[in-house]
Length: 379
Image (cartoon, rainbow, N blue to C red; front, side, top):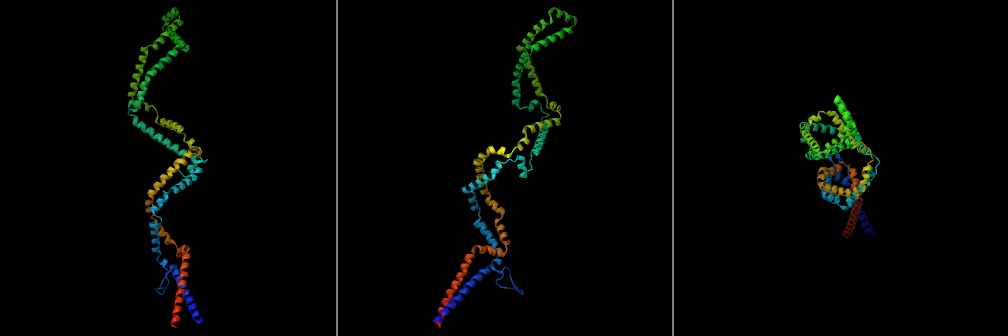
């Protein structure tokens, strides 16, 4: 009886060892040996191991698996359009943009930090170049035109409507002047000069009437003449006719009186001073952004993220196609050494492989029991 028990135990141990070692060896042979071995010109069977031998095929299959089943356009689109993902992106961007909104660095300094080849000096140069081009183009375009052709019709209407106002203005200013002390004095001087130029006749007339009485009599008549409707009509017709003549004059008569370089320089100086690029770009970035911070972060940024993720979602299939993700995975796997592949696989499935080894030992032990029983029955 003892001999029978020892026999069965021996067969169980042997069966378990054979089953465990066989499974363990089979698992090892998935990766090892890493390269083929030769005896003379004959390759040793089962070298290299299965995975080293099929590494290229494995890399290709892994690439297909990743693209077709793991990282698919649909899964990425679903992730990108997820509300929680968009909130996370908005929150992350808000945190990243906080230092920008409170930055004490000037606009020029930020442009330099971001390596953007723009500065206030360069923008002033662009502005001056633009003014120069526009002045030359305008001169070339409008030289052959009349003032009437060059000016917008509404401007011409404004000038025509202003003529009666100008007549009233001139008449009022003339009346005010000639009724003033200075005007009266000027009338007296003019009468004195007139009488002196008439020689003896003027002297006799001056002695007879007296200079002051002549000035006093003439001055009211001048005022009446200015206020008379006929005078204003004459002045209105004069200004209207002169405006009509002026409109028919060609612009070249005005333009060629002004040196081109002086025109360009004056326009450049005035516009650069008006725009004040230096002043604007020398201010801290926070000066421009801080007033709009809450509006941007609470309203604009979520809209931009929503539009951006929507656009990204539509472009994902094309982007993945352009990225050749399957080829990237294949190249990456092919670049791994067999030892690293073994570490990766065992790192994921080491416990399972141990269980397979133990299962082989268990099955070997069961087979040993069966064999021992059969041997006892036969004997």
